[in-house]
Length: 215
Image 1 (cartoon, rainbow, N blue to C red):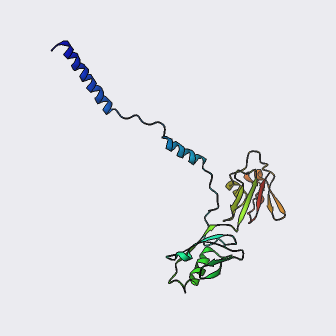
Image 2 (spheres, one colour):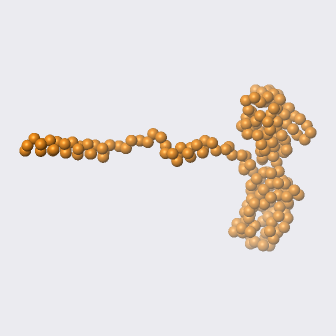
């Protein structure tokens, strides 16, 4: 064996060892998420805060009012199913049935009314009624509140609870001069007092149509 042949064997063996090491080495972990994931994360971070229009309603206690939207489902009867708006007179209209009273009643009571009215058209009607949108009972947040706008008054809500639902006060809000417009009355509310447990009689329940103004 000459010297040239020996060197060729050494080089070939070294190459085989290097290839074997590369094949067995673990892949380097990806330290940054792929571009698609980064974009998805950005969308989640910047997504708007959902409104409370779809707040859950207690079907056994909530009193339906004009401008509410009911979601009616009659099992296996699509022609009687779907969203139905409550008229100003408190009635709803169903095809082949006509007008039925819903205002002032609970969704559970309306279920029974609809089921009874369908007995001549449907054999053993199975009816479910839920409130899809609360339009009859709303209050409003105006001024230096984090999320101004209208809110459904689904459950009893105090002024302090409403401010919390609205995301709290903005930085330069006058927390001592907040007031509620109720018809032609102005009811003042001192936020600083109430959050420190003082003059809690100010923290009254809201009524439909109230405007909370944060100057």
